[in-house]
Length: 510
Image: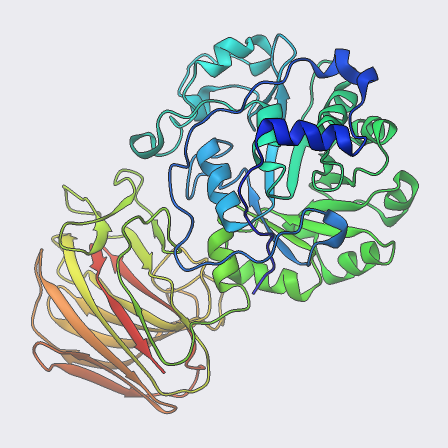
């Protein structure tokens, strides 16, 4: 498991100001820069924290954090909530995750939270009007949930940077990225706000701009400074700039590079990583922080497996507040739903194209030992293509969680796992996948009952060291293969190819 800081109740504003004063963090000489302090908005979290995930003890000092840490990119970057909104930040805060965000300046000099220079993508505006050409009041009138699941989260007001610090600074480690601005003292202003709130230990000075970090150092050299780059930041620059750490994009985070930065005494964060397949090698290489749009999911499965014994996973009340994942190659179906019959599926009203891929991951990842495993689930045929050779089924002992088709991630000779395919015409197959459409091996075939829309298919998978058996339990039709090529542990998910699948309660025993 990856370490995270604990979420705890927020201090009221009066208490926070008393701490600032009592600890000597108040800086009267900076008052003209700091401006007025407002109460943070009283919007409640849009979603509860993840069920069954207990955050670890609070750590509000970057120098004392238990590394590696998993960091919420923009809170939750359009996966569990709209990015850079209070809903996203509350989700990450409920997990105890450090929160990364983006800081821009409005026309009237207020610092606000947004990744984009314009408001079109997340706020639903048109015309590419820039944030630095809009006043704070104009920005606060927008709904920043328009870019992701507005039917769930709307309205979401654009956060002010100062409100962000006040709301989360007493409970979470923070990574506020200071983005380019027209003012010449941007780093001074940002650092002064951090000092005003007494967050020199828990909020990073974090930017692509070395000049901004130098300004922040001049305000308070104890604020840890992290330079960001989609490149390699040299060890010599780390030393000359006195950096506490660097944040680099994933392609540059090799073990050799990480070791070189560690030799200077600095930390290495890596962005943006949304799958366990990528996260685990980075952790093994020594990365100190993984920046992700889905911190709850990575925390649950990075270097972790479903406990041995019996585990039952039922469709959750809210997919957004769970560790379930989903993917489709279709752009017109929208997000999955938990249907009234308690199947997780898509609300499809028209047949999918023959090549459309669907995947639903209920949050199961078994260990390789013991090899004997039993998986029971019920699948549903929600919508079908007229091509009766299209198929749906279950993938198991699957090595990766980042592939975009039923056969794997497209890498030749890559160990993927096994899948059971049920074709609409009733033909069933047990398949060993090597990662490519042309490279899979059909281990065994059988003929079962054809299926149609709205049918449910209860299945039991029995896995041993040398055999694989899948049985449709309502008809007794089964298919068996002798194969010991791949380990038995891995991800379990449901897929459809030209079929919109659904999945109900799933139980694994091993």
